[in-house]
Structure formats: C-alpha cells, structure tokens
Image: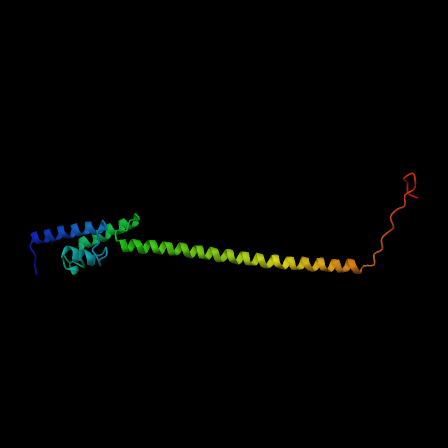
Length: 152
C-alpha cells in the first residue's frame, strides 16, 4: 500500500520523536532501546526499517546515535545499564575472590613453613638438652685464690 508524501513526513516525525524519547531513556514498560520498540512507539511497521524500505535511513540514524551514546558511557535503556553495572560488579567481585584465594594460599604456605621450622627447632632443643644431660664433660675446678689475691 502506497502512502502519500504527507503521511510519510508525518511517520518520519513520529519516528524521530519516538527515537528522541528512547535515546533520552524514556523506555516504555516491557520495551527496550531497539528498533522493535521504536517501531511500536511510532506506530509504524517494523519491516519498514529494513532493506530498501522507506525508513531504513532512520534505523541507521537510530543505531548510530545509540552507538555514540554507548561509546560516551551513557546507556539510555535502564535494564541495559543495570546489566552493564552488574557485569562490572561481578567482574570486580571475581577479581577480589581471586586475590583472596591467592592470599589464603600464601598464608597457608607461610603457616606450614613456620610450623615446620618450629618443630625442627623444638627437636633441636630437645636433642641438645638430652646431650647436655648425658655428656661426660668434666668441669675444671675453680681457681684457688691466695691471701694477696693471686692464683697459686
């Protein structure tokens, strides 16, 4: 079915208005910032945005504007923004978990080494005590002093 130039202009105006609303973040309930929602908001058949159809240039413009917003760090769709935020948070938590696991491994290794050293030192002390008790080391008698303080 052919449409008149006036109808086409009116449709383009509705599409541009809907495009602006979607890119500002005014997403209808159950919708997204995509061509399907754009078509339903502008009351235009979605197929009119593809191929050589009359509004394909508006689809290209919409996708370009959406991409430029995303490149600038703005996400007009609140759900997409929440998904991006949750993915970033998830990645950060995974990194913290990896660091925690690494720290736990290092501390466990340190603890094992410290206990091994303590056990070795304890065995050495016990061995030296036993050796001191059973040794036949004789001590020299204390030097005798005379009346004038000299040794004899």
